[in-house]
Length: 249
Ligand code: NAD
Image (tube, rainbow, N blue to C red; front, side, top):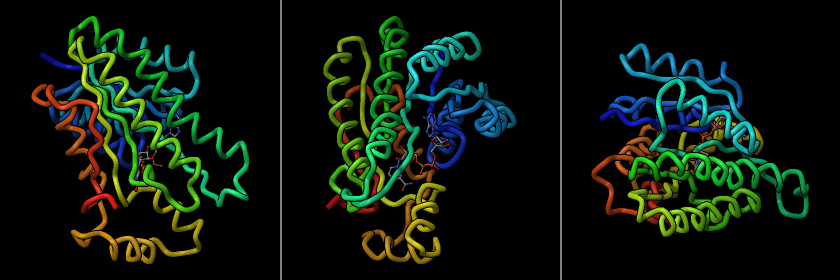
């Protein structure tokens, strides 16, 4: 049977790679990002490969926008039973310079956004007796200089993931977190610009600490998300899997 997946933050980077991969796996995909036009290319790429996709604009931190996005998913590509909470932002600063707005923005998108999406989608998962929730955590959950807001959000997502696994397991729903290390995307490019480094310099510094001696690519994360979203992964739940080219230190 064709499953329907919602992938948030699917306009670019890791979210786009996950959306394409889940479509390749045979799922219909709702690609959600801040605006419909932003995720149009991802939906079009899926359709051009013979898949089924909708581009849906929604701010995941906005309760009514989330409800509308899930309704539109049901109407256009079917009731969702797979959810990948990938939308994310950074507002890095050392804690003494971090504004309350920087804190609220990051916590809102990652944590409130993932909660709102999971709460809206679980209804369809419970009705189907099947569901897969994959939340994007990060190596930064272990603590990262300049990222008090982001590391708190990413650690919080691990707690949310485990609780979703506990509450929804009996309905055939699993919830797991993927925690990437350094992945080449616009997010890490923006980090390089903020630090006054070229992307190549930042990547070289990052790779120096990665046992497999390379930076991660969005497809590395998509491959893991594909497994966790698969039918066969039903006995893996409440886990945090680091995709960081080595053990998370
Ligand atoms: P990215 O900045 O390239 O893409 C993030 C996407 O999320 C963008 O398309 C953006 O428009 C969207 N988005 C932001 N706020 C949103 C909102 N309120 N509603 C809907 N969409 C919104 O980032 P990426 O590197 O692809 O990261 C994807 C996820 O992976 C994020 O959760 C990020 O924290 C996490 N992550 C990334 C890395 C990395 O090294 N790149 C490492 C660990 C975790």
